Image (tube, rainbow, N blue to C red):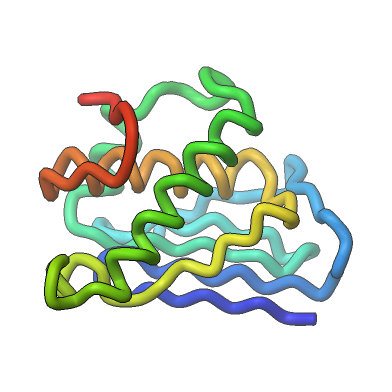
Length: 144
């Protein structure tokens, strides 16, 4: 089974899975710098990939984001689920929310274990997005 998610311009996330059970990421995950505005995490074995394209995010991630393991994976998953639900709601309301910011829905399945790195990257993008574009998706947003 393959799941694909694409969010163009602001965030491009591709999650491909051949497994139907909960895959976990391991030390085989690699953060691969591709361009100055692009961050990519890939795990060839599990066929998962996350690509985020947004001017300034790479710099912000390496200079402002809290270190890995500061938050637990369950904390990141919970925040991601809440923020992505609100994101998807805004995509469906282009008359109310800018379609330039919310271009496409994100297919984030809470029943799939994307692993720490994927959740860490998505969480930090959501923090960056909310602070940079002065959006509040839900709840407290760290102001780094």
